[in-house]
Length: 133
Image (cartoon, rainbow, N blue to C red; front, side, top):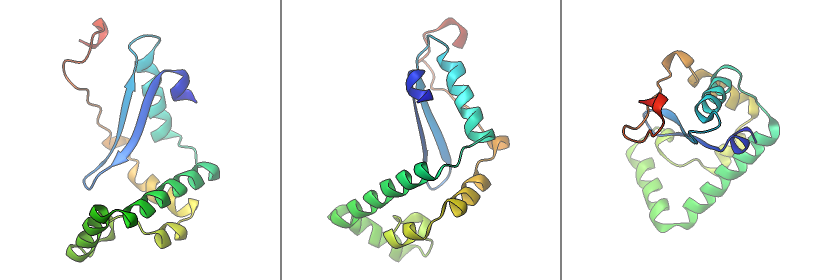
């Protein structure tokens, strides 16, 4: 609701090397301030809510079902499982997702959300406001 009311889009994602937050916001009405406030809350005072956990778990299960139904994605997943013994490089399995609890997820995510390692970068040439130059 905070993101919608402040006209911003925030995505938390990860790849094999790092996790990242991609935020888009307006240059008017304090967009930069609002997105920095949201990042502060994310790293310093994250909220751990069961309904949000359940929604995320359902979204990951939907993705797992989609991988099973796609010839290309399921082949890629099988190849990754055969090439690497590390399950982090393959798609999550439904049985693994069912084993997750909010406490386990909180412990794992908290270990990775390290504000001291935070880096803020901005794409060059995309700033029209005077204060960003």
